[in-house]
Image 1: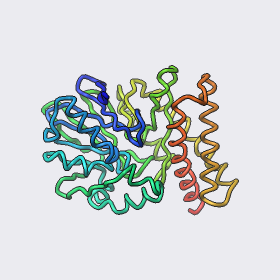
Image 2: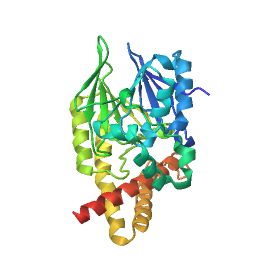
Image 3: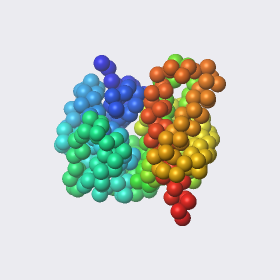
Length: 318
């Protein structure tokens, strides 16, 4: 199966089939003087990345830079494993994420708390990254890929405090990770473009997310490249949609929080509210409840509900 798609003249995406789903999480391959991969997904995606490189005619030894937008396992869980096949590569990450990739003990514990018995199937193995092969990137720090190709890193909290987004000025492409939300390409057959915020636990913050979106807009990108999933040429539409959904997500979270007392019950109710809200939105475009996109939306809303209840709980305790 072909898992590589050309996006721009020197930019490709490899489908990592995260969670066993197509169009879920992708790794970007930027072909420059220094061959660069942005996002690794989880370890089960690494064979797809290696196969994709082979399909493009590259050897893993040619990869020089591996960039992760943040250390959630669906974005960086495979970095250590991929690095073992890329002897000449260096990993780049937010300063707050560096120590967790060197010692992933807390990452593993957090993921096991969320995914339970499915952890091994979805994420194993989590391979520590040697300290001498990892570099932390400060806000607005640059990475030179060649004489005329530079990437600029921007700290972009809202989804996670340890989040960076990367602007490729040559392509006017911004790699947004999860800060600018999730794009659902499975809806392409309907003509509907859907971009939803990612409010996963435990560092979601609506004001920080809006501030990051404002920063993104000021960069005037022509393309946005999402962690989930793919590329869009409509950045302003993304900013408008995600910004408008943030308040609605928080509102549903507050309703659920006030209606229940236990964390689990609040999360379940928040999920119900979110999922129904998205379903009603899609039905307004005559998109059936049986559409395949709903599997992914259901998964995303279950995680978003946790993050919303966690955020509201923290707000109420301050």
